[in-house]
Structure formats: structure tokens, C-alpha cells
Image (cartoon, helix red, strand yellow):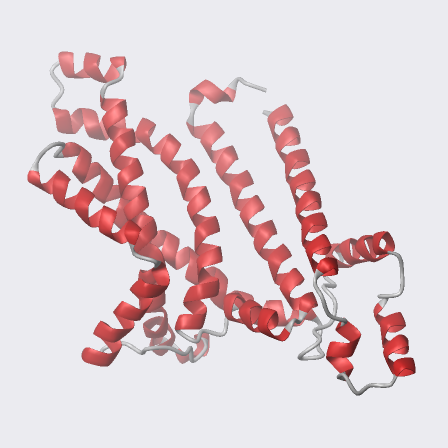
Amino acid sequence: MSLFLLRRVIGLVVTLAVASGIVFALMTVLPGDPAELMLGTDARADTLQALRHEMGLDRPLLAQYIGWVFGMMQGDFGVSHTYHVPVANLIVERLPLSLPLAFLSLGMALLLGIPGGVLAASQEGRFLDHYIRFKTQVLLALPNFWLAMLLVFVFAILWHGLPAGGFPGWGGGFAAVRALILPTVALALPQAALLARVMRQAVLETLEDTYVVAARARGLSRTAVLIRHALPNAFIPVLSIIGLQFSFLLAGTIIIENVFYLPGLGRLMLQAVNQRDLPVVTGIAMVLIASVITVSFVVDGLTRLMDPRLRGRP
């Protein structure tokens, strides 16, 4: 187990290093001068040169990359060209909205997807199975931004029951919860559909295993076999899908937050892209990448703990 953890930690560090190199390379090849963006096109040449020197843009690329990486390790992501404040401060301000939104969406996807998949598997070939599969196929075909606009039209414009956008802050109490209902549903439903289909297939495959057939031969009912034997083992491959879903949900917040005008990391990143605020873009990208890699690391560890076949492997 210790060798497994060591290998996973090394893989995590290497993945972060490669990702940081790709992000930095993309940042350097983009057209435009950050100093000119900050001072404007009418700035004097000596003023531009002084600002480039202050920002370290006149140093070799390798020195810039090393300084950037060591700065991030200390929590320094640079200074925003647009807001003229540390990028870390902007991330800290917006993260308390984006992370809860992703976790709420993941929780809703689990609550809907896993029971839906199990129910479909228990009714294989019957009307309920076909109905659930049809509904999940429709949800998978819908882009989440289109689903978000449809939810706004029905529940905010026609029904007037939920807000169409905006966020009053966590101090707003129930109003804050109401503001996140539609974004959470828009993010969760497609992932719940995917989870239901994966769970259904995993349960059906597990029901065909030898030990499950032997349990049925001992007189256990299909429901008892499903609950006691099939579900625990079917959940192991589904756990890996859950880790990937968290990545999709974090990426999906970029679109959903802009649809609902939520002041989270996703909206900040899109604004930074439009304003060519590269320190903000790269800072948010590295935070999202680190979050995804960390979740994948945790999911791999949980999968190994749950699957006895993997515990003895190095």
C-alpha cells in the first residue's frame, strides 16, 4: 500500500508539473504584450520597458517559468492586469461559490443516478427500464447550457418560482440556496443520466458473476442478491466515473456561471479570457487542474480500499 501511495504521489507531482508547463507555454505564445494591455497603446516606450522589467517579462522564459512555479507554490499567482490585485485574492473570493456548486451538483447526480441505475437494472427489459434509459439518453444529448436556459424559461420566467440568475452571497441565507437550485440542476442532470447508465450496466454485469449465481442457487431472492452482493461490487467501477464527473462539473461551472450570472471562478475566468488577463486565466486553470488531479488521487485510493483484489498489489 505504501508503494502504491508513493507511486500515486509521484504521478500527481509529475502531472502537475506537465500541466503547469503546458499552461505556461500557452500563456507565452498568445499574442499581445501584458505591459501594453495594462498601460494602453499610447504608453511611452520607456514606461512599457520599465513595467516589463518590473513584471519580469524581460527575463528568459525558463527563468520566468521557474519563478512562476515557485510563486504558485507559495500562493502567489501574480497580479491581475485588469483588477490590479493579487490573483490569489480573486480566487479566494470566488472559490467559495464554485466549489460548493460543484459538490452540490455531484451530490444531486449521485442521489438521482445511482438509484435510477439500480432500479433500471432490477427491471431489466421491462417498461421502467426502457423509460429510464430513454430519459437518460435525452438528458445526455442536451447541452448543459441549453438545459440551463430551458430551466430559466420554465421556472423563472413562466413560473416565477426561482431566480433567473445572480447570487446574494452566503449571508443571504435561504435566498442563496434558491439562487443555486437551477444551476445545480442544470449541472447535475446530465451527470446523473450518465451515472445511471453506467450503474445499470455495472449491476447487470455483476449479476452474471459466479458468486451471484451461486447465491441465487442457495435460494436468495433477486432483491436480496442485488442488495447484499451485486451493489457493493458494482459500485467499484462507478466510483471511477464519479471522479471523472467532478472534473466535468468543475469545467461545466465556466458555462453555467455565465448563464446564471454567478460570481464564481467560471465567470471570472471567462471575463479574464475576454480581457486577456493572462495571470487570472493561468491561476484559475492551475487551481482547477490541481483540484481535478487531487480528486482523481482520492478516488484511486478509495477504489483500492474497496476492491480486495487490488489491496495486495504494489
